[in-house]
Length: 521
Image 1 (cartoon, rainbow, N blue to C red):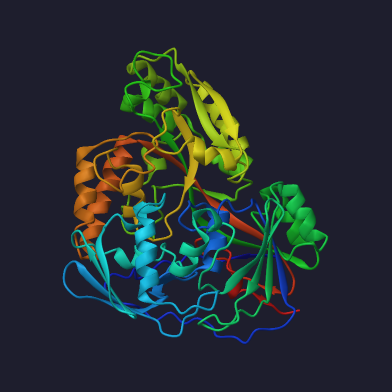
Image 2: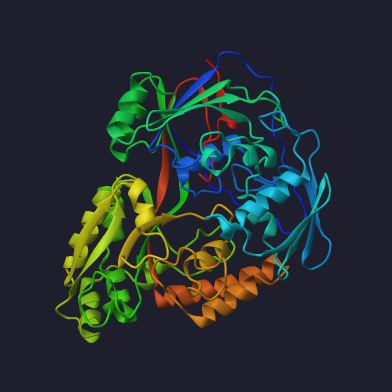
């Protein structure tokens, strides 16, 4: 049996907290859930970096001031309410009676410490719009932005609160191994590349989790994950192979659960005058005609049907239609349909009829069928004279290799999702001119620069009104679709294999959260 859940993103929060009801359920004894993940966490320190497996652990161990629910609605977390005092000043009232895993009470001082440490971390971009933050008293925080900024509460959903005393006592090196937060689970053990075991935190402010223990097992091989599910070793499998969907759905005692993903597989094109893997005097991709030719040479329908077994959705834009900044009526695939003849003509018009050679950097174990997609791209681009040399690597190496400021990549295949429901965070990180504004362009891997895009992002980040922000970001979307600094390929389908007796509805952001899961038998 296959279940599919729709994506629902409505009512992004700008100036006041919406109610978010968290279940307060008495803990059941001896309930253990075993989950098969595609990879181990890289970090347990939420300010050391992010990727999906690490994010899943972060939100079990820690809480933010503003919580994002399964459908990306924003509401109270460690802050029970907030208000906009003036155009740039936000006042947050903190929740009473919250306890850290080490027994210490949560106070405003922990928020101040978290923000202080964040500014010197790899995740400093999360606070790029914050000017000052002060503790009015133990339960009140005031945050002042550099200018009016409507999306602050949404941003705070990604900032997880640390315990000052614990962090200062154990030091930076031990934050990975001794995480202490206020989340619904606490760390029991982490044996790298084998398992992460979490125990329910009985003093969790919303009530202890029903499932007493969760075991996360990293199984990078899709066939191994499927076999472990069908033999009873696992209760849930993340990223069930598209080739195994029919097999698992046909097995008694199991079901396949799917949901449209937020993860957009994208191709970043280096637009610097010289590119490191292209041995020509001028980088051909500085010419928009070449970028359009590449877009037209990619047959996303073949990728969808042959490689993804029908379980992907070609991308219309850089964010889904539910997000702030989505431009109604614009479709990248309709603007640049698969057309080899037109692509070859564009290459010739730009002076590259004989093509050129460059390297594609991609993962071979992070996205669904990523290695196969990279190989297909090489075959497709060869039809217009572009030779792709594939540099495929495990995810553990990939993100460090392409990290900005990277000087070694010409063409990158990666994924990007926007759980904040707002294109501005993506655009500021990926398309703002490099080196021009602190906290921006941190993942501008193609070195794209457009003063008009910068101006519109600045306007979006300086209004207290969501509708005005939406209008500015839609203008950015229109420019990006014309400029083609990045080619959107498809949205993955989140696919889970689940045994009978497990009540599980996947989250839109793919953060598999045990607190919402029930074991019924």
